[in-house]
Image (cartoon, rainbow, N blue to C red; front, side, top):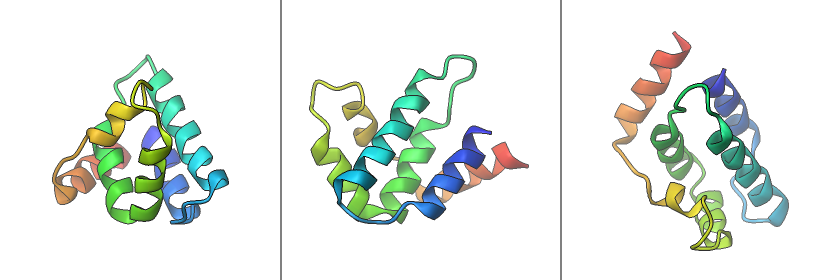
Length: 92
């Protein structure tokens, strides 16, 4: 369900740097950090956002204060193909 919600977000959210779009992404990421029942695929999600929505990714990274719990998310990175494969496994 986490991965399906992510794919819905990534398909609908524009690759822009306006406040509304940035806040939508940051609210999603805050919700991701609040999940306690399972460990969400955070590294994979951030890698896909960085690749598919680079303008939004960099704008959101600049909008987050370094003391914020979200700032660490923008430092996560991995191989894009591996991230896609791992996310596909959640859906299958």
